[in-house]
Image (cartoon, rainbow, N blue to C red; front, side, top):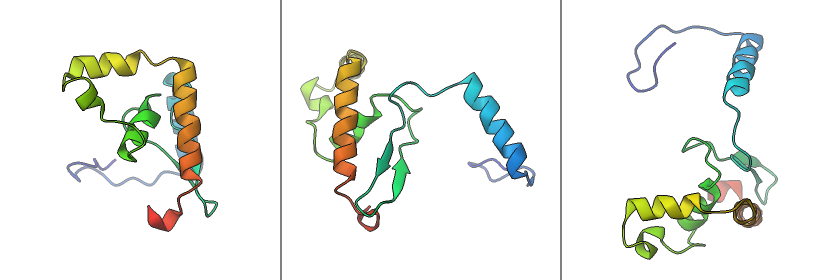
Amino acid sequence: LRQQRTGQGQMVQVSRYGAGVFCHRIAALDPPQPLASPLLQTLDGRFMRLLGRGHQPHDAWVLLHALKRRDSLAEQMGGSFERMRSKLQTFTWEDLQKHQDELLACAREWSFQDL
């Protein structure tokens, strides 16, 4: 298969069935974490999913920060990466659920064209 970064390698056609079996096996080996990769529905009824950063549960908080719904974690922690990471790791499941619910509410206000 062609590598994304270098563009080198062989071009291979894969059937939908073969791709589905491969995805199913990969998903069984490394399932997504709970509350990771939420499915967001926009104002115009389209759906999108967060797929970056390894599907971490705190991605919802990071996106809320990018939308200016959260203060800068870097400023709160004085720029210390270790303190930022420990802060993100201390979120409870209830906190993560609140972040995800807020993100779902925000997505309902967006239209797909605005993104």
